[in-house]
Length: 533
Image (cartoon, rainbow, N blue to C red; front, top):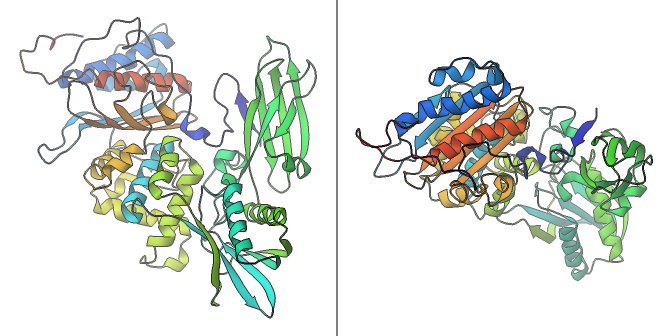
């Protein structure tokens, strides 16, 4: 199966593509943007009609014969979203002085595919259970074996580990006097379960954003390359980010460079049983290169191969390399180790950049570190243990256990089912905990950072909105916190499923709803703008 990229949107094969980084929507007429008159304030009681009006405006653009609409019920009965499902919940942020108040709800208790909004649940529990300073340790142990130098490297799922950290481990080994290694053993016993994720679609597991999750993660278990246009009629040039990869991969290149008016698209696929890359499509002459990342099918072997190369660069010879999934029972001495950044930093990459591999590694770390008290542990994979910990913890925090069903930690699986109510309950609960500020700091900021960097610029939401994005085919979501200029802080979740509209249209509609929330004011019965529309 191949993966299609189009130059009109962000590359689907970027390492973190699922979070819609850089995919800013163009605002429609009437939004608070430069050159447009700023819409007037609204009262909370006007939200029903205001949101219905936003959905109606999308319909009127998409269809020459829009249906009549009244209130919230109309939002699912117009041509643009006639078959789409919207789930929305908007509440005030609870505090010690004021309980939460529901300002707007539409199907908020029903299940939706959350896309990357599932990361909100995973990261909230991880932060609460593991603490902000938790670090993931990768260790090298020396195995005593009749005069031979045998090393065991134990990976515990550090998603941030790169070739640089391998180099630091090698330096530690040299300081220990290691000059040669008879056997280098890669220990993959920390995480139990299938690799790659059995809940993900075939096309996703070929892409960098769907890379497999294991204990010995390196360079996010993906390999990067760029596709360069050449002369018209010539195939695109494949340039690997690491030139050494060119010696390992075979390429079936059926792409072509077209003139400066031709359509642009690229289809990239890989054979999961061998290092074979298949490239099809076309790019315009003189245009920029197209970045691509593909998943590594055998991450354990890749880790050992690159570790062996790092050792050789320091004149440390390696005899045999092996991968084991069985933990050792012998006493061994740790002679080198490196720790990940603190969890608070890992969560920034997870939520702000919507990194699937980080979310899945953190889920398994939860299972490995806090799942030992679960019943029937031996029958659960590490990921399943992590999901059980997520449910137990969220239940204790007040999130209704039947308001969501998680199949993974990242939201890439289409077996996830989450209600807007579950997301809002989670956001409300974490806001009352000591780690609340760290959690909020991990979220994208409108117009400033992460997957919201290109959205809400020069609007009242810029800098005031911290929220998690989510996008899959036919799905868009945004959930988080908003501080309106003239109203109390809000918590909200907006999800649309089963839509045939472009992702840009879905995001634009969600953005208009959020911008409407920035206009909220507290109102008395006789407020002068009560009757405004």
